[in-house]
Length: 355
Ligand SMILES: [Mg+2]
Image (cartoon, rainbow, N blue to C red; front, side):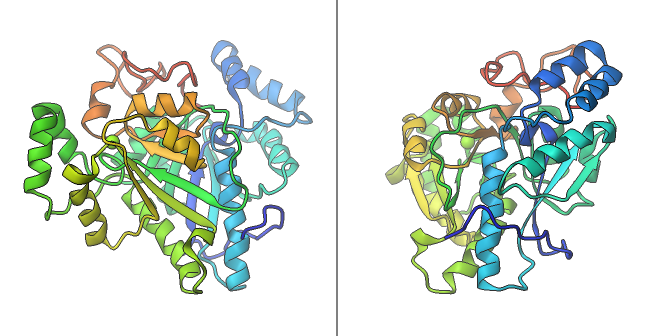
């Protein structure tokens, strides 16, 4: 099992690393500072950050996920001291370098959080550097940036402030939704257009035809590759330092087969599958206690956050189209981006442009 305190240096050769890029606001709670930036401008923000360099930032939405991922590095290096296929955490942020001292001091304050790589872009679009970092997952509270990342082919999700409770410290747990997350949204489109009966008929008829790849599939495959290191050692799978879960609204008997066959076709092993058949996912997630739950549905993400689950939204597919901002607020503006007129997530996190 992974310890959480020792320090494994980030790999020099990043080609093999599983790179998680995240904004500063995903790692730390910078909401008060963000408000100051929006109300008083960049100079006031930098002044505040410099005056408060001694003041450690509180944990942000993805803090526990990052900490648990880094703990897996300890376990990987116990298997092989030279293995460079490690989690590599990179801050890719609109932040200004002059505000970076507070970030660095906060990183150094917390046990188990060790990251050396960062791009502070001084207010410019941080997503243009995701390719340079070989990013395998991008997390940010800024929906506009996340959409850009997904459109550029990077697995990405919007994170929200949460009260993640009782998360395990000896195993990284990641829960995935199926449709529009691991899978494409092709079946979801049928459901939206033809209703449940049409969806069930379509999925039954096409049970043998694998679904297309969704925006998070590549990340899930990288996670599975790291799990295989431990599986090869013959350890019981429930003792693996990483455990994965499919938590889908699909039904087992009627529409589950296509999901299972798709994963089989890809050779993607997910440890547990939970077919909720439309029932709330929140109770299941409370039992699983994942460090990250990825879903495209605002409703599922909202309910999970209310149940103190660190949930993140994947703004992709037909469900995501429905909550795009209505006319007037074009994407790419400095205004509130991507949260959409019907968003139920406003209460969890003010989705504003990051610095
Ligand atoms: Mg879905």
